[in-house]
Image (cartoon, rainbow, N blue to C red):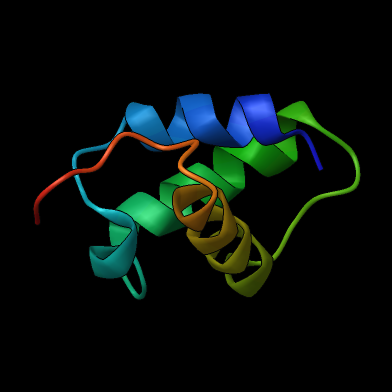
Length: 64
């Protein structure tokens, strides 16, 4: 999984990791990631990876 791309896509959207599930922002993030890389990822894989990156302090903390 391309962590750098996932982080860039996360930073381009306004929601925090906790607020992402079941949103159009997560749909767009997964779609864009899958278009740019192979293999594609699922919504669950993207969300779990973002949670892990946040816990590893690799993501900027956001509100909302």
